[in-house]
Length: 297
Image 1 (cartoon, rainbow, N blue to C red):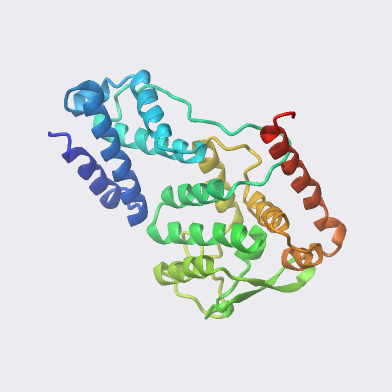
Image 2: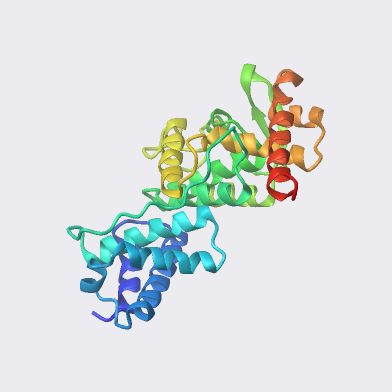
């Protein structure tokens, strides 16, 4: 088997046998192509199933160092390593003893908002690991709602088909049956519409918008479980939860000058004191920036 055929066969395996989404197939095939090209130059020999089965930890470190030099951040590098592991397992066979290499990890400390890059990487990884393309579209849409509109996971799960067709805002029912309108970014609206198109269950006005794997209401625990697996693969903190995406939504808005009262309305907080916690978090973030950037810090 020639080395250029391996990434293509892997892509076909992902699409046919693992039923991964087209986005996942493209991303993982691209990683496989990059790895094969790098190893061919690194080894000075073709990358075959036999040579891939004998890959060393030093080889993997060299590949990751090469990718980091191309500008890959921690979250993206961890996703790249996850894709590499999947490709090697396919190419070398499940019985092969592949080297273990821990991906880059994000420093842990006081609670911090997830960066935009980490939020997108998390949502992409969750979608890539979904068992069905329509579930991948669902998970992507739900996580974008949490990060892009500040919803609680229970609020997203409680949406019904009555919210369709989507407009510039979304009416959400939160705690104590309090309703509020939240703006819908075009990317979030597009993600929900893509899910609706892909869902095999249809969307009645009085039925859940987001469905579980067997067609019932989507259990919030399914998203939490998927996020736990994704944050492990990405090396993110165990504080990276679905609720942390809502937390990041609030902190990033506050950092861009949002008014506390407006933020209170967007989040659906009953009292302003619940919203004021984000001012402390934002101040902590600013202190980190100061310490890392100021020559006298």
